[in-house]
Length: 501
Image (cartoon, helix red, strand yellow):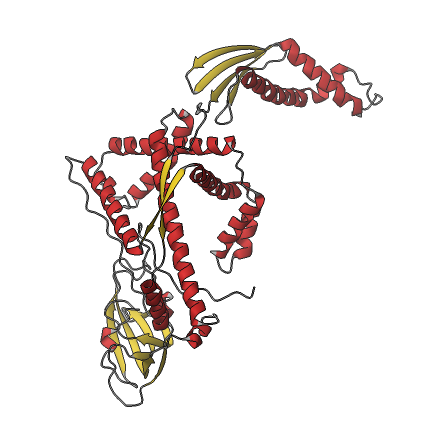
């Protein structure tokens, strides 16, 4: 085998490889002999067919097999002899493979950078610890009580006021035509709770049991259903009953309705959920800061094709956002040249950090077990109620989908390993401090982006979208939850009922 290096860039090398025709023909003849030993050819005893007959019958198939084997083995030999560590599968292009002639082919290899030994024992990191306060726990208890409060009929005939619950039937119409999902029966609506679209509940204030009235509303422009967004509608409502809420006493009996043994157990469950959410949030925050520090510490060259692939993936998302008028505010108004430069930097950072974490994981023999992948699959399944079996089957029959779950598991393992090796200072802060610091950090990031855009006028900051008011529950499945703030830890929801085990 003759090898000529035609390109010697640091992380991208090209070679022209020549394998002697005699070597190829010898391999083909050897393989034909193996095939002929078992071949049954009319007129010849097994294993006695002449080579010429075997070539006539099996020559093309064997030649293709030898080509594939030779390309694979000789390319691996080339890499091993020169101590090259490919970042991806080498690109091979056959330039000549005529019968009786030398095999000639080109190999292009993208190489992993030499990161060298990494030592995190001197790396100084900080991790926040937040503990839920009694005030938060009590506030959550009160929200749970409000969400689970009962009601009783109003005995005295009177007009409905805010805070009352009206039991209604309704039919929603647009241009006097009932629309799909716009009908509801025996719907209990608390006036003033802002469960329905703006203006709906206000028009029921003052109504009495037995009243029939038309409620005129306009669906918000950003309503979830495009068929209803921005349109005027009329709901023909029949008020069937007027009820008033009964204050829920927060005690052991209330805890029992949520599946817990006592009020103390309920408080403990709330505390555990809040602390778990804070731990997850502060862990993600610490990971972001670690990755920022690693990006500053390591600035090695990245494989060009890997960088190109990462950039193309990101750029497709940018172009799709631009087509759908969903560009980030800080990107609006920038030229394509500016955007490309910005996302090239982001791509380089991602690739560099990915290679660094992979290097650390490999050097320290960190792996992802099948059990961990199975747990991740079950977590995905739990997020799709009613489709759990389909989700599980999809992942178990799709290796690429399983790989998409392995990557974040592996990354978290490496990050946790770095934290174990580093000097970590734990800082105890209150939930209020965490929120204030998170908001300040987000504001500083926005200011930094705005400063980078000068002298061009910075785009206005994007506000968190307001919660979309739902049509009556029968029409749109109930009120939609507000989107989570991008950089704020969420408040605890109701604790889950205790499981049987």
